[in-house]
Image (cartoon, rainbow, N blue to C red):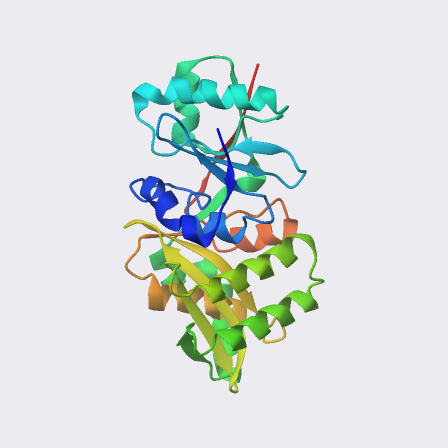
Length: 295
């Protein structure tokens, strides 16, 4: 297999394989792959069995494959052997990461040589959009209070992100990153935001900027990946404005994704504060992802 780096020009090729499938996790979206391509050195190849094979590295620098996309069931075992052969020749520790549960079950049925383990810090948080909009119930009472407090103190103006305000959003993104010690993960996230702003016409996403007193104080990006799910890729706000994060979370779904039953807010990366924040919104479920090695 001959792997190449992902570019914006590859969107049509990757979408040909990705779009027909209803993936349950956030990894299998062109936007996810594109904005994190440099952080995780994401590359792709087309198997001789006409399947999309994506290779990336994890935070420790270990390369692995994502699950094959677009294969015919009768070709899967041959594709697996193709991946295993590449893995061994290149001294890779893992065969697959980011594997969804259905695919992991397929591997279990094919052979007992696959060692399959959950990766908790990589689980996606799935929410019911109706609950993110209504925030009903005792457990979400504090979220309603944060929003009400914010609206008592400020008069936010919501605008779609487009070419007219892309520069303002970029300045806010740089400011936020600088305030949070813009290194490692956060540095690459900033670059991902800037890539999205540079390709507003090519990438299929919705963006919302929040103005307070005429200035962008927060923004968010998301995309509808199928009839059942939207993914929130980026959400940033000025933390000095109490309640702004809760307001953005609520307003974005209410204005852009009210017609999609589920919202995927991605993983917590094992970061304690992020996990606590995501759990506080009472997820409908955690969508599991798996690591696969071989005996």
